[in-house]
Figure (cartoon, rainbow, N blue to C red):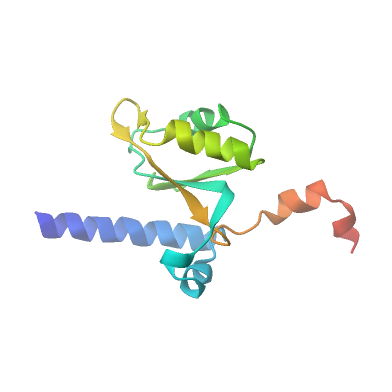
Length: 137
């Protein structure tokens, strides 16, 4: 039974990594460049883990929107990982403080951590919308 569980977890992890790569959301090379012990953390991007399978993306997003304005909110198709990017660092820290170990659907506590700096790629679309002159450059 334990071997079957380990195989299933490996499949889900690999599928999540494939999704992240196809969405061009994560810079996996950033993880290789910096050792985990010495990496700096983002002030605005939160990684959300241990999401229950029954959780809906809209419910999760609403939960995180209570703490501020989101620039980006993404949930993997397998409900294994979500990324919340806030406009402001104080909003992200409020969400981290208030939602750590929050039980989604009264079932499973979610695990939160600030993403490593450079791990989540910059949302170029949002950046060019904020600075239209960059489009002409």
